[in-house]
Image 1 (cartoon, rainbow, N blue to C red):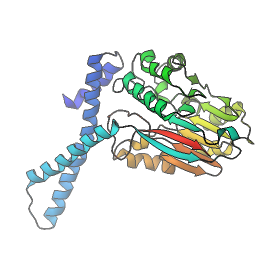
Image 2 (cartoon, rainbow, N blue to C red):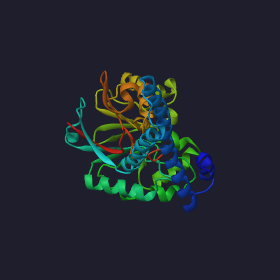
Image 3 (cartoon, rainbow, N blue to C red):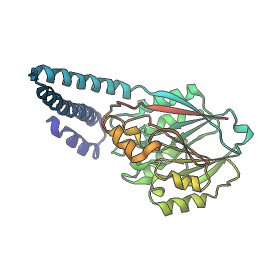
Image 4 (spheres, rainbow, N blue to C red):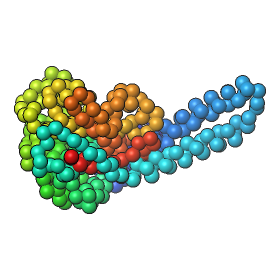
Length: 322
């Protein structure tokens, strides 16, 4: 039953959104995370047992298995707790030609909440409450607000209406908003009072902010054309808000000062942390630089699939401009 539970739960999650399905989906997703570490434990048992036998010893296989699987279960429990504890990461950014009015101001970056069957509107309520306590001047939401399964979109997004950032909140869609009708997610976010940047530029008290949806960033030529349609002024500071850090070289060539993204989750849990770091290199997480471009890739606030994090942390990012 456990071996097929996530498949069954996923099929149900694409068809209905109710308490029973949410409980089943959450339990099955958690089991997938535990299974990951149990599989690693099984491999480790055989490797350690073989190495010890080659060294001339004859260990108790049951004791060895109990020890290694005990460690795996302890790591799984830690992963569940760690994924539920959202932290605040603070960074500073010095952008050339930044308007004087922006010096000392703070932008909050939120990404990858993945609202749906595992994390619902109460989770977003906690995120919004944290943001209101932190009092950023502007909130930037870098996609995958939703998990992409069937859900009550308006209810899930409703806590965003309580945001109190004086310079507003802005949103771009991620790949999970592309799983079905793109527009319904944008409408729900807009009804919650957040400005959706439809691959366009806004000027907020002199600072250029360009938001590009994931669907407009997956192809090099289209991404570049979309950026150029936004017509940024290269002599003034600019921020690119886009879901994935896939094409930072193009962002740098087109003259942006700072790119803010999410998407990678840092791999979320081992061994996917290792795999993701090989795919994205230094842009998998954190504050980086490419030529004249600064980038920040967030781990994200939520989880996708297993609600576990090992080797990463859920975060809200506060960026103070100097």
